[in-house]
Amino acid sequence: MSASPLLELRQLSVAYGGIQAVKGLNLHLNQGELVSLIGANGAGKTTTLKAICGLLEPQSGEVLYQGKGLKGQGAWDLVAQGLVMVPEGRGIFTRMTIDENLSMGAYLRRDAAGIQADTEAVYQRFPRLKERRRQLAGTLSGGEQQMLAMGRALLARPKLLLLDEPSMGLAPIMVDKIFEVIADIADQGVTVLLVEQNAHRALEIAHRAYVMDSGELVLEGPAQNLLNDPQVQAAYLGL
Image (cartoon, rainbow, N blue to C red; front, side, top):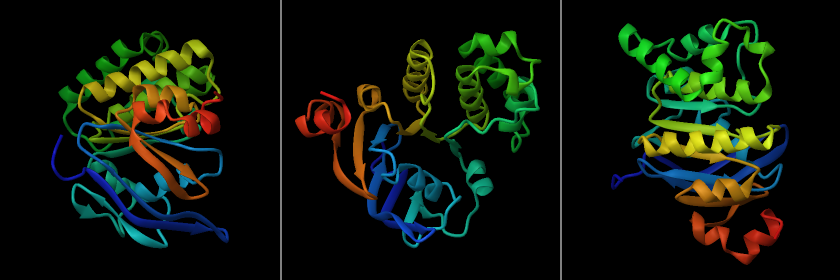
């Protein structure tokens, strides 16, 4: 892992609709890390991701990516720099085919051979998508749509992948598959920030983790330590 963080949040505060959703957040990810951000609904996790990727403007503080501030840049600028998000709810193009959705992930790329190779790699990772590649994305199951959203993000060749609630609403067998894929993506060198309601599974695969409550960080440390922390177990793991 590199000495300087790939992503760093410094005293980040975000407010919208009269709500102070994030309050003075300090967080970092090193190159190659899988870091989980857990907390109850309304803790500010999704707001944090949206502020990182330019969908919400911070009230104060700063977001540094590869050592440079992101102020004034839109989400489209960040994709070109390798910062990619899979949003809560997947955000697929329902009236496009699977093939067309994946091609949108590579929209900014011009390396035709590389795009074809990466598309085939996604289909190897998700064989069910390959079987349905000409099918409209809106006709897929929730789990298949999540596979597609993650595959589309991988076509952008991310350096940093933000995942917002990837297991939400999925059947247990599909949850297993999604977490297996997330761990594999991280093993291949992509830095991952995972926001996830399934705190137990998120902590199991992460290197480090942060616990967020009411817009503030209340705990942080190695994921295994938090997994065994009585406070975290009682509040988030149902133990």
